[in-house]
Amino acid sequence: MRGSHSSVFDSELYSSLFTQPEMKLIWSDENLIRCWLEFEVTVARVQAELNIIPVQAAEEIAAICQSFDVDWPRLAKETQSVGMAIKPLVDQITDAGTPLVKRYLHWGCTTQDLLDTALAMRIKQTLILLRRQLIELGESLKTMALEHKTTVMVARTNSVDASATTWGLHVSSYLSELTRHIHRLDNLYPMAITGLFGGAVGNLASVGHDGISTRDNLMKSLGLSSPVGMMNASQDNVVQVVQLFALVHGTLCRIANDVETMGRPSLAEVREGEGGGGSSTMPHKTNPRASNMIQTLSRMGWMYASGATNLLDQQDVRAASMRVLNWTLLPESALSLSTSLDRACRLITHLVVDKQKMRDNFNASKYFIMSESVSMRLADKIGRDQGYHIMKALLKDADGTQDLQQLVLNNAQIRKTLTEEEIMTACDPLSYLGCNDALIDETLAFFDATDKSMRA
Image (cartoon, rainbow, N blue to C red; front, side, top):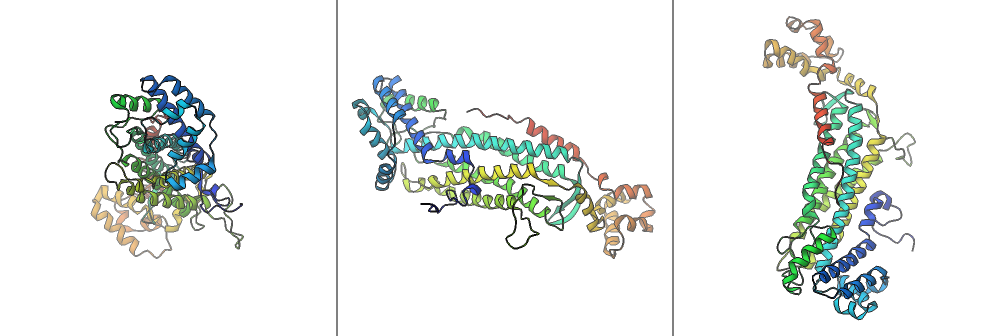
């Protein structure tokens, strides 16, 4: 029935705002079943190679899994009764299979082996997609940082005008964080894609002495990492993945916050260029919808991260209740981040930067934000403390009718120390950018040195 979905991830109205198409396919039921079937085919082949089951059995298991047509209503009904979908799926395959399939399918496996290994397979697909998106966003940020390397703007700290900087340097700080996230992902990747094959209680008893070989060959065939020792109760690698997502959300939210703030009419230094975001009642308004959605998705990501540690609440060899949480935590956290990265890339690509307005905004404080520049010029000649207090007293008595340059030029005490040329240079934002170019260059080099590909 149209309009019957209740989740924003499946809603006909809202799904496009909360999902990225490729990521949605990764976490679809269809892909989940595909991963389970691939597991069954692969473990059978590996066991046949180790002479655990007949080669003919492995071939017939592969044939039925490749041609198998899932009875979704039956699977859903039986899953509701059993609580897990593995046994109902195995039963369906067995019912449709040959005598050898009935005898050897799922040999030595337990439900958790399929659940955790399929999870690792989809985490692998997820991290590959996210890494590609991180690189894509990084390239857009790099382009913007280079284009605006000398675009002077007011730097703000604690929401207050502070000193001079460039938009290129500010953008490069986003890129630096993003590059660190890529490195974190790369470091996490081998652990994050660890599968599971341990049998009922993790000791591989149902496979016997060939258990370790079966496990390692299975994981190698699936392109996953083999567990070290018993991991039946362990979910720390899964939790770490969700925590990584939360860190990336932090960078994306900062970008969105800055664009939203700098886009206010009183500043008007940037504006979203994708279009849309209109008000239903005020014709003049264009709301920053990209920024708003990124902020929303970030809060969702942090919510998932705060809940992910519940997966660690385990006892004995395995407890199902907490692990079931990853059925919602992983898909939703992955969708939230992928969608936010997609939105952020479009935001940066279409962002309209008003260079002149950035420069004009120095007038808002009568160029008082160049006070540190002047005080440091004074410090070179009369000491930092004295130079600071001279400027502090000068600005304290300012009535707003003169800008900084006029005030300083008219101050006899300062004129005894600084020449007119020195004063005018100190009041020019371009003269007080420090290591701006070098900082941008080293950030771009840091990103460029990062491997842009990801091995499957």
